[in-house]
Length: 329
Image 1 (cartoon, helix red, strand yellow):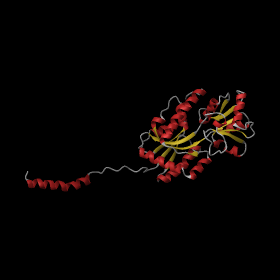
Image 2 (cartoon, helix red, strand yellow; image 1 turned 135 degrees about the vertical axis):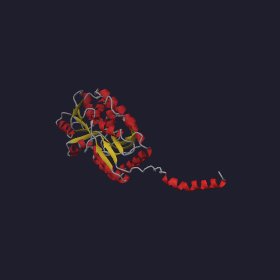
Image 3 (cartoon, helix red, strand yellow; image 1 turned 30 degrees about the horizontal axis):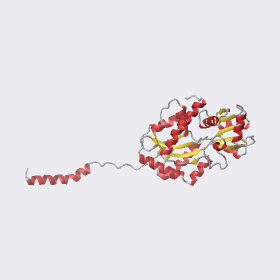
Image 4 (cartoon, one colour; image 1 turned 180 degrees about the vertical axis):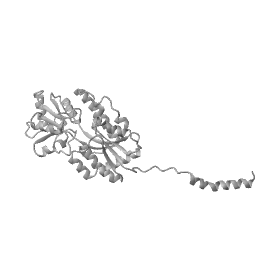
């Protein structure tokens, strides 16, 4: 090839280069999250504490993220349906799960589950915590939880404690109280919280263990009294009410909690962004106030703290279930 022809060929190639670049499709930049609504799947029906607090949080998150956060209720035994729906979803930050202490109980209570919350989810943040309350009739002879403990030990087998749902948080909280307090008492399960209130007022049971909303009205009306709360520190929602630990059962602790998790493999930057948004929302005074009305303390956390709580609760409730002799499902 002559020198002139070679130079002409090179010039033609250079002139063709911009046109070739125009014809080459550009690689799209990574889309900013979120670009579409986010679904938060709850293992409960509408109207309960978890549903109410999730909707309060979702409304604020929708404003902060400029995308709707939609609540999808998917109740079912052990939270299995909701957990499977999220664990099997694309790990793209658009499907999230409400994971609770009930999830930990399910792992302990079932012989096997079609999901593993430790392996199938990445944790994002806690949402809130709430106590069990230990309640008696307003005219009960037991003025303190210490009085109840003393009577239970003096007359083994005489006193009854009412809870709901064998294997639920309230029931297992009662079993833990019985075990750690070395008490010979009967844990009596009822179908609903109102059934326990009736039994308590009739003196069929002498102590009731439940969540605050279940007894809020009767306490306000002066029919029932709260003797203690189940958390290790005094609850800001019940100032002056002692903990079970301080009332005489050392080391007793039951903390119910709600949290948000995403399918395993969700990009870390999405987890960080959602966690940051949740921390900001849960710090809002109006959110804290609305949570408090249903007995919940807004309580964000790091993903690591949440995973630690989940794994420790699984071990804790497994031990309680085995000791109580509750058959695994």
